[in-house]
Length: 117
Image (cartoon, rainbow, N blue to C red; front, side):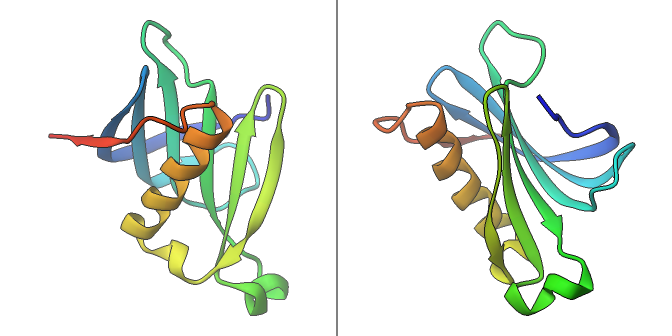
């Protein structure tokens, strides 16, 4: 898995989605070349590391006409960019879309996320 190489980040929101704890991270510094705006990290209950990430990354200038930010799914079998939009610069819009995508990838279609605390 090409997991984000997070060196520091600030948790902004927490969710429960079926058997997963999901943390929305912001103010991210990483040891890789990506410029993360936000990351949703999905951790299965009982695990210590995320098994799935949905990232919101700042697009380079050459791709900004498509949108300011792109979404990417990162898991063991899959790393895929899912398109760009200006609206994902907003944490609430990103979290809503990221939770929907995460539930789809994890096969949790019947589960609804709920925000913790």
